[in-house]
Length: 435
Ligand code: LRH
Ligand code: MN
Ligand code: MN
Image: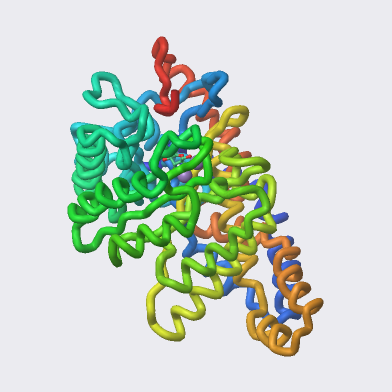
């Protein structure tokens, strides 16, 4: 990292305090794993290859539809969001990219933004368009939809915005556009269900046509909210059908919070991977709906099972050389925690699931499946899931120059206190862009 946000010496000092304990834990775990025929150093090297992108909009405090309680030292613009993301990456070393959201993160100086981000060790993952709210001075409202609106003018405006997002993304080095629309109906009869999807597809064809050769468009589905009766892109089936209609550059994005409760999300992942349409993820966790809680905070086993499917898909792709590289991104909203701490915790939890899934003895699992030994098949997954790989993750971080304990190092740095002084709140401003 060319321009680390935090003092590197201070991070090293924090690491030195826990180094002996970490070493002991790492050796103990190494012993456990070697009895299972697993080389801990290989896993640590694998952990170092993991990356998940940060959502720029999560650097500020989110809010609910009832209120937003601003946090201290919230970023007031995209450059300050980058600085906060730089802290997350410096300490965790697993978040080398940021996913921007336009127009919230719109800048006239893309090259300056790129340079600043690169200095923090950050690049840019998929850019997100926003046609789910009206911006000040906007000509046509999205009140009754955007890409699927009855109004041709509103549709054209929404298409144009997405094309602008691609243009901005090109300047930053992004390679994908994520499209989530809140379009849909709140009442039966409000929309012709088929007509809405037809209009959405027409609009998406125009956006697809503006994609550079090496870009993808990710279609993000969501069951409900803000349209509570019938959302246009409500499920992975619709998302898949749309991606199929649009062509090879269109893929599906799975946000873990966008499904009905108890949905088998890992099966959706398996299906999309099987048919070459798994574009990427928005990782988060939820108890009820689109809660946007920290990854792994409610259902870490589900996260593990998702990564188990990803490991299976990666193994298959390796054997037939088909290439498998879904985009991993976080998508969270923080109301009661420090966003930097939540983002660090989540990035580490997603990395944990990746490493736990790598611990699954896939040959044994296959054999148990073939012989219908159900109990042992389930136990094979559980054995991997129950393994505490914290020492592997911490060692990978330290070896890469990050923090053994990111939250402790962050608190010791006094960063939040410093930016609280440097970033006095702007009256009436919403730094996350989420109002
Ligand atoms: C919609 C969503 C989508 C948006 C983000 C702010 O619920 O998950 O990804 O772009 O939240
Ligand atoms: Mn999302
Ligand atoms: Mn969401």
